[in-house]
Length: 137
Image (cartoon, rainbow, N blue to C red; front, side):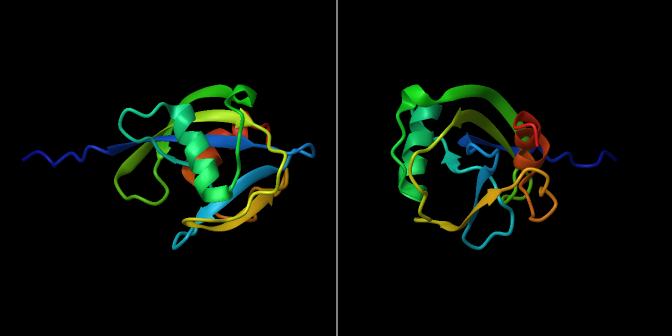
């Protein structure tokens, strides 16, 4: 008898790696969840990843970003933080912001994670395993 193999559901997403001048990393926590992660969201059908990121930053944080100021970091995968038996495949983009983000839509909390304080909050797997390494934290 062979054990049933569960295939992980893939979630396509785009997310922003946003650091300030002192090296702090902007993270968000969605309503009803416990893990902090990069701002961003699921890519809609026929939507380009950068368009997804621009839409999500506007809807969730009230930020208007010039796409020309972003830099694609690549496509990365990790266990999804909020959806069991799922894997997130995220297009990550580095960018900076000039205005203060404001929590809106499903965002319950915004933090700026200090370098060296990565054990102080619960982090989504993609943030913990990929983004911190990319950010040099």
